[in-house]
Length: 262
Image 1 (tube, helix red, strand yellow):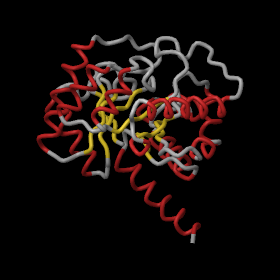
Image 2: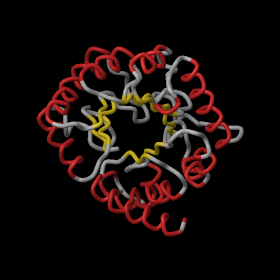
Image 3: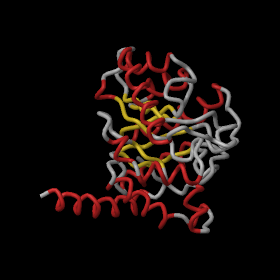
């Protein structure tokens, strides 16, 4: 899954792809580099980020989704917590709803996914972007995250979402400390035991920079190592900025995993 942020303030690539022309070119580049899904987002979810009004978020993402759909048959994901944005994005050519609140910000998001048959990514987050890094605590981190995602997926199915349409995301960096992030990655097999594909978003994140002492634009090697680890522990979808390099790393990982399974 290639990241396409059409925002002025995202932590890594904010402001780079705010025009539809630049966004379409970047999407095509990621597709050429091996991306299977393009994840379009119009509201930053970095720690402390301010909410974006519905109309502004639509103005950011809809022209981009429409333009990409017109120029390619790419699988598109809309990264949003707002059902109005998701509905319009699906009508404009998106196929997947990627909701960092797992449908809690707007419970009708689950109904929309059921109604449209869209793919649905449910993510775990403690708190909200404005507060999520204010001393997050858990009784049992991995068990708590796994139980939450299982419960939200079951609720989605009760609302009519097909289980085959659901993926789950433990929310690396979303209401997690430095140690929490590493624990989730090391114990990812527990989450992978659920009957849903696991999506992992670790690309260029702060905990990698803290470990390696690198700024955002210097974190590709650490991101690749984390992506390989996540895949080897059961992640099915890896959400990244550096598509070409990650695809190469995952091809090697997948080949080795196949050899080990023989």
